[in-house]
Length: 315
Image (cartoon, rainbow, N blue to C red; front, side, top):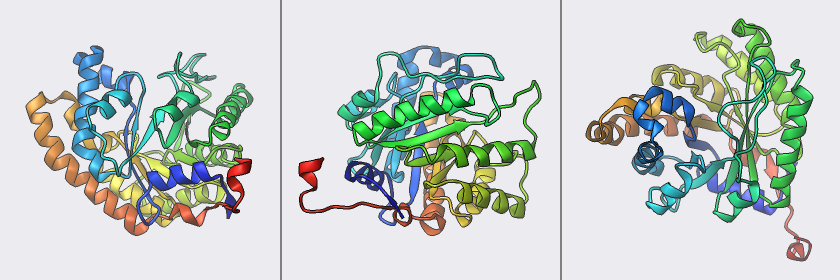
């Protein structure tokens, strides 16, 4: 097993079930929600939506992922996150700089790992755009190493979310995406300070063949030196459910689920939204949580912490 610091281990424990599996409710979306609902151009409306979803669903999650711009402090202030549910906060700005075939992520201006630690986050989440053959690959690796080093300095867990992209105007084929996602896991998870990989499905989401899904997810497990969880990428709930079964059977430690659970609520009036979240979305999340609890690989299978009696003197 891989050694880990006490602070990072505690953060992972806070983010997981008693068995050590992840069911993370993802609500760090910003620009794509504003595009989906013009009312969300108003920060107050977008914040209200995120707090409403958090209040309705956080109790069925092991952790909630929020952004610092319109939802993290607001959800805490509203009492929307139960004490038993961990809190993960994003650090990257929405979108990317550079051109579409050489993308660069950046940190939210005025935000930092230190501030995330101070506000009580159990982990931070860093999204990067990565293609192993891109001219910006080395730059992205260096950027990730810098943030990971900050997480080591503050003894705070790091959830890394690399998003794949094409180096041409054409969309990645399923085979190309498999290569990019697997190779990304191989290159980025060994970076010191990276504790958890939030990974895309390593195939085109239209591929629903169970054997293809299982084999591709097994390649991610073999390539990653950290636990990994499957993001939902706005697919339907039914499709995501099938993906989760394959991913967890192949060695994933759970999920980070967003729109697959709550996407219909984005354009609903407030009253209808509340009813949808209380019933359909909650039932979906409970079903996914049960799958992860039953099938996912516990984080405790990956990490061990040394705790000599004088540890605090060296801490």
